[in-house]
Image (cartoon, rainbow, N blue to C red; front, side, top):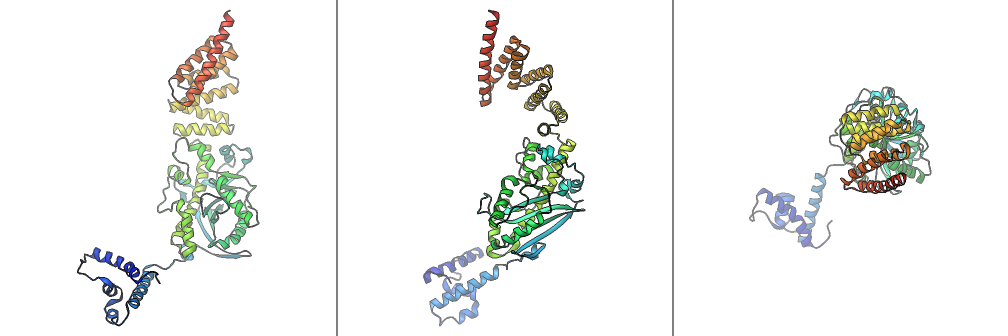
Length: 454
């Protein structure tokens, strides 16, 4: 029952009733006071029998009627089992809820067919990451993992209340979602998850190295267990995605990549920042209506993670890049992986697609490759072309080449002068850095020429 004076309690009851009467067009002559509230909430029969009651009894009767009405208007909590495909699971550590679903590999996630998971070259992941130890990383044998947590900042106070895993099994892509209905179910959930993950020899995440893996390692440690994937090959797709597409796309978040690369737009998806509060509400009310959207969000993340892995591998295997920034980024990825013939081919593609800063950058990378190969004549020509395209570093490298290799001080000084003139046109920190270098080089070259002529 409400607390406070009788007057305060009456006022709290009266305000919503007055608002409804105003919306209905009732004027000052309409029902008012406690009699109006009784007529509205109790009806004429109850009103006729209330003359003998005290004001306090009448007020308490109104409060009780209001509470009953509010309860009738509030829908009953929806059980989890009715909205999410899954079941209660019990093991030696307790209970938890396990959701399960699958899709056929013929299904497309956006524009990407999941069937390509079966045909990708296992060596492609090593190219994406430039890590030799990732050679033979077969996505068909990997588990795709994503977590939903009680907070986005991490730390020991953050728990993973929903952990989704997906993998290829025959002609289908399976997703299992381990959910703790309350905090005391974490031990049982992690115990079952460890048994599941022990089947796999590699795993894939998105930003897992910074978030999911440290969080799960901490939660397993707090439960006196060890995260079973800790020492396995780990493909964190965030980093290859940034290398391939950051130059062109404004965001490399998973859902942004879904839209831009996979052609997928989620309808009715719950924002990630709202998910912790949805779980807190679930713990308090046990209403699965909003929680079911979290399950769907997590499931979509896992399937999209698999589709994005396919897309990134195809991008590298088949050279899908068309935009100049994408072509340059692909060339850099191939260069990091020491695929020099292919990276030079992509840099030359940039020269045909872009006449701006990317052209100069591509010329510098080609010059670097020529230098590494000992082709100094070609390197010098590329540095000169890069300088003419507006890149001061081209003239700096050309000046160094003529000063130290050809010993042609006149050409070295001319290159330094051209470079100085180029940076004088700029006003950024990079230009000031180059300006100081050109100034010292010009002074040194003039002294050398003076000594040589003397």
